Length: 332
Length: 289
Image (cartoon, rainbow over all chains, first blue to last red):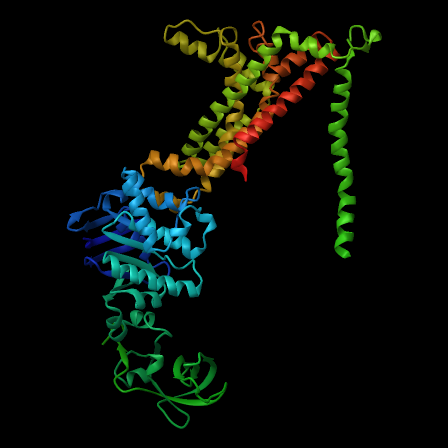
């Protein structure tokens, strides 16, 4: 069980309104990712759900029960922090057992649950070490272990992978997804990295300045962004935007074209431009192009696309792959 | 080559400071050791003679000697208890964001800037005095007989004064340690269902272990030598009730003019201090690594 409902949740720190009002429903067993640029209020929203911050107004309910005024421990949620927040003077075993000890669980039951969690997370051989003797990825696992022994109704992750190196981040991403598949518990995951959001989420919540810009599955957000912000935020490299006359020709204030939706030609096309830097990734090449109309865009080309810095190039958007946005930024 | 030159040059450059420090330490120690084996009384300096172990024997058989050692230990332990426990509590209090935090912190720390004799005199004449001290006024207000602190509880009174002086030091060190505690750990413990008391015992206290060790070690060094507070308040009395080892040595040297006896007492005090140091390093020193 672990469905969470937010009703018009507002949060202000003094005069500053961080979250001007969020309505959100999270179904039991869902993997929800809050994503947005830094300072968009996603961590605050998570902390409101955790109970570490009090809501200014509005209500939060978990499994139909109102928990707006309940303390963090009473909500039955477990959280994994960005800094892992392990207790440095306790062994891994004691760290994982700490919530059980606080719940006054019997020694035998504690031991059983700790060894179960250790088995799931491959921590068997590290149980007697201190957190200081572990690597970043292992600490991350201990933090997750401490969360799963409590069998919470939902897990909250606050940018858990941002302190890991790139290779480890990819591994842990997969491990967390696997964990979600085996536990089938609700997970709320905060990140600023849209790749993490796209790869892990059942449902993505895109936030900007404390407002929910769009909620939907990764592919939904990718193929049907509700507004210009979501279009630009989801997908890597970013969507290219072209404004002005060229956009008006397509009947929009702004048009957005993803890098992979350009037809490239060295002879003719709708948008002439000059090739800047070419980033060769092997399978693809990302070309940074300065268009003659002043826009700077990125286009994806095949791995061996034969252009050089300073070459002339012509681009045409693929039919039906143009995202159109109005004056107010909303999709048309 | 260059490294070796740099190293020997560095050794040469720091030699004067180290030699100076060594002389500074060795000369007084050697002279004390030498005097402790002499019959040397300032009242009759002409008849100075070799005494052998007599001064040590004399000091050791003095009935005040064991009382003084006992008093020294009680004084050190009493002040340590009050300052560590009180320091933790005050540190927890002023760690919270409150109005006028800067002023409050300066006020809390200010007793440390008052020199010991001045502090002791203020306590003696303005706070603990049986007829015009503040405590006497409070007692009278409640219709009680004022307590003559220095006559009835001499050692306790001195412990209170010294603890008052050292409380800011303990508070300051413990406060800095408290401020370095990771807030996310606290929040994690809160989510794990730990009550405020459990959070204190399982997280805050272990985190402060190192700072508490520093407080205990540094304070012990200074508390073994408490002297001015006793001199200006009880003069070690009544009887020997508030005489510690330092004060006993002072009495031998400056009241009986027995330089040899005082030197022997000094050497005994040095040895005892080393015992205490070894004991402390074994008991709490492991927190430092």
